[in-house]
Every structure is written in structure tokens, then in C-alpha cells.
Length: 508
Image (cartoon, rainbow, N blue to C red; front, side, top):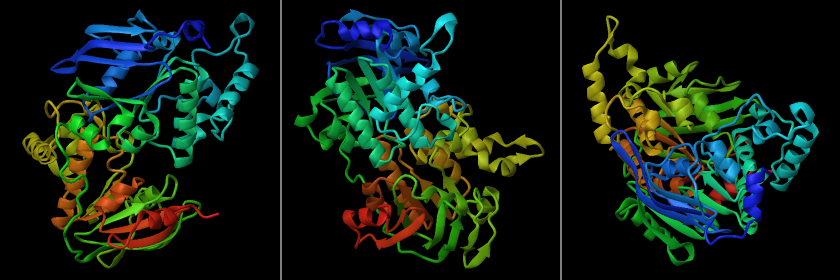
């Protein structure tokens, strides 16, 4: 533990470990924070909720030293502070656990956790023994299941997320900010995280918890503050409010129907897979999907759902099995081959696989159509802009213009551009892998309505999700997977939560 953090923990406990008063942050053309006020008590878990673009991430980056506020005051342990960089904030005892992984894959777990703060011996040499012992104590306390010496790049995404979270426990901070910490975690790993949060809380640490998952908010938090359009919409005791009230404050309206199921009747069989197998990943997968049908695929993290989608889309090569398209066997050896048939894939990792973050919304939307829009070496900007304008309006995408880099957009608007990109190709089958992960409740509802509309227009839609309410709410038929195998096939009229849980549970 660094000296400043240790001194802060040892000092008399103030009423608030962190106070934000009328903070303002402005970017060109956007007032991201408009006199936001917010406070955290010692030993409480305080949820910060709001739609994507509401200002949550901006506020957290101000607190963590990534951004400097343009106005207002911030008090930490009763003293006014103004951090110039994240290192200053961490040295004071404020740590931000990012939603997006900020690890160095080539380094060990221990090196990543203590990067910049490693124990030293004489002449500035790293004390590797102390480093690994300290790290292993933290990992064992969190039941992580990996060791200090493991290379981060060799770990699964879920375990890499646990490395991020271990930093909070390792540095004994007095304010820890968790930004969507369970996005890549299994249920078991989530419970381990919650136990870590409870331990931090018992030590008097103030926790800021950002999540779009209402079940988590009501399970783990003490108070909830809502942001909308960069303004505070109120703070409530968690025990004295409910999800409907929080949602209404977040989006400024009631959700008439959070989920919407397509009313279309399945038409011709478009896709059929028989015996699809990749050794060690998926085994003997067989199912079909028809035009105008929404099929859900449910399972826990690691069940093999994404691998099925990637095989259908030509990213992975199967060891056995056959893919049929409109009754004819196909050799789909690349995404280009899948696109020629009329298949689109919205991947689970929108930033790593779905978008070119430095490009604008227009160029991302038309990326799969580069050859079609290229005439004698020149892009047809008029057609590109027309496509951008069409999908911006249809999907209600909030952006300042066609050239605004998508990296600067909210998660919900980024996801809409990924969907727009594939809709622009006029697909017959659209595969959506975790289509609403990490986006707000309002954007989720819009995407659910879009799924229903696409099916009613004749598209086949395969929705892969680990959120049971979503799968049950939008699907006409549900497939379940566990341990790389297909374990169930249910019509929505006959399915129950118990049936889905039982079918998706790993077998011993």
C-alpha cells in the first residue's frame, strides 16, 4: 500500500470519502457534465446509473484523473483535490476499474496488478519474491483460480477482467470505481467479485458501482444516483426504490414494453447445420433457422455459443459437420463467403471486432460495401452519406455527423452502428452475439424492437445472449448450450426459467 493511501485509510473517517459538487465538463459541441453533484460515504456501495451518453464515464474519468473538470469542486477525505493524472488519483487512494481491459498481455498477472508500484530492493531492483507473494495473497483472497506468475495474455477474457478487479484489493484504496465489472464474468466469478466488494465495504472503502444490470444494482448497492443528459436526476436509497422508478428517471419516460417478440410466422428454411464440431470447443451441433424467425441461443460464458456463430460466419473451420443454406451444402471458408450468401454477424466484442474506432459512423456503416461503392478507384460519397443518413434515422443513432469518430460515441450508439453496417448489406440471416451487452436500458429496448421488426420483414435472426430475460423476451424459439453441446430446443410458449437454467447448466 502506498503512503498516501495508507495515511488516508488511517485518518479519522469523514462523513464522505468523496464529494462532487456542481462539476462541469465540456467537450467541443457537447456539455458532458452539467453541474453534477454526487457523494460517497465510507463503507457504502453507491450505484451510478444512466443511459449511454448520460455522463457516467466522463464523471468517473474526472474522479480518476483522466479528465480535468471545467468547473465545480471535488473533495476527497474532506480535502479539495484536483488530479492531474490517474497516478495522482491512485496515490491518493482512488482507483478506477475500467470496463475495457487496460492490461499488458505480455506481462505476468503480478506485473500488471502492481505496474508502476512494484516492491523494490536495493539499487531499484524489483523484489520478485515479494511481488509474487503479495499478488498470490490477493488472488487467493478473491478465489481467482490463477497465479501471480501466469501471463495475462494466456488467460481468458473473464480471468483478465478478474486481474483488473484484483488491483482494487491489492492497493487498499479508499474509493474504488467499478465500471461494468461483471460484463465478462461467469456467475461464479461474479459472486467472487461481490464477496470482494463486501470485504472492501467492511473495511470502510467507498464503492462506486456502474452497471446496466438492474438485478446487480439491487443486490449489491446501498444508494443509487441517476444521470441523464449530463445532469443529476436524484439519489435514492436502494431499499426504498424499485427498477421501474430508476428506469423512468434514467430515460425520462416509461417503457411501454421492454421486450418485444416478433409476430411473424417462420417461412422457408434458410440455415441448417448438422453435426457441427470443432474439437475441444463444440461438438455435434445441429439446428435450423427459418426466414422471419427469431431463434435465441442461451448458455453461460464458455458454453460454445460464439464459436457456433463464428463457424457459421466462416471465421472458424469445423472439423466435422455440414452447413446448409437454402437446402444446399456450403463450404463457408471466410466471412466474405458468408456475406455472399446473405449472412451478417454482429460480434460480441463491438470495439475489437465490430468497428474501426478511429473512423466516423459513415465509413463504419459502409465498410462491408467498399467494393460496391468504389467506382474507378473513387468512393461514391453521395451514396455513402445516403446510407449513413438512412440508418442514423432508422436506428435513432445519436452522433454529431458522419465523420464523428465512433470511439467518442456511447456504447449504445456504437452498437447501433455495428448493426447498421450489417443491415446495409441486406442480409437474409443476421446473427447477433450479445447484442445489448454494456448498453443502457433505453437502447436495449430499441434493439429488442428492431429485432422484432427485422423478423417481421422476413429476416432470420439468431440472438445469442447470456441474459435470460432477454432471450425469453425476444425469441420465438430457444436453443440452449452447455459444455460445447446443444442441450435443448424450446418453443417460447413452453419455456420456463427453470427449464433454461437446467438445460444450460454444465454437466459433471
